[in-house]
Image (cartoon, rainbow, N blue to C red):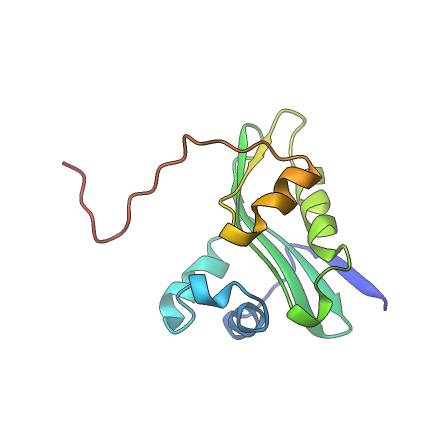
Length: 137
């Protein structure tokens, strides 16, 4: 298996949605809302992707200032390619694009907590989420 990793290579909305459906992430993303998915892929400023020939098999989609913080908002690997180190490599390549003092932050899928702890992340219980149907008071 000869996987190629690419930095900020153009990815279509269709490719992004298809990958999320082939991973476990589609159940937590609005894959049926094309406009939202298009905005997600088009407005990311750091995308590391994994390819098996012409097939997108993994993505680490981030938003970053490259100096202080990088929010890794999607890490998705095609189910057929999981447990082969692709997700770890995507994160390593993401981190290599960042400044030396830039931290990587993500919100884990519930079942992935042990994985992130195992590879070196520290769990932070201070994360807060304001859902789109809620307004600030």
